[in-house]
Image (cartoon, rainbow, N blue to C red; front, side):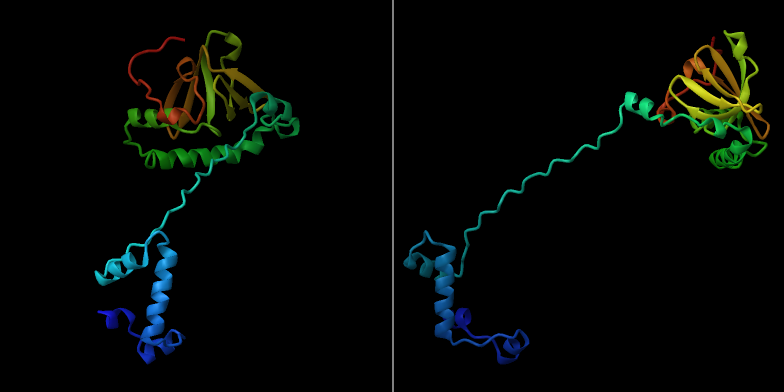
Length: 220
């Protein structure tokens, strides 16, 4: 047993590992010294007893890893965003023609979303998709409103907030239209969808998880 425990490595293995072969006495001394350092609380007799039974359990205390606290990214407050004018469109950029390419991109996005918008597509499916879709770039018309001055406003949606749409008209006028008490119509490839603003007061990012009722009438 001692020969197996303290036996030297074969010469070929020692050369491959770049090790200097040791005699059995040297190996035995090395193992004893190593075990004394590893198990300082055990006496020599106990260590030899452990070796005679070929069972060695070295003491090892694993260090507890400290959990790193995730740093929360600080975002701008609503007041800071207003002060920095992050969502304001410069007057020289308020031109209908500039945003026509955005409208073309939006139409392609809706066609892909509605599986090609084929003539035999179910209107209920198209309506459900449009209610959850991103409307930036869509052309909408105010068809009904409790405020008559809003009726007839038509243009491309540039920005959508929780309570308002910002729309650029063909006359290059930027209109801020509230969702509350307004009904908007949206047409694409022959399909007309109606958006009841009073039931649509959500941010664009929140609508994807919202369930809308497609049946019945909705008052302003």
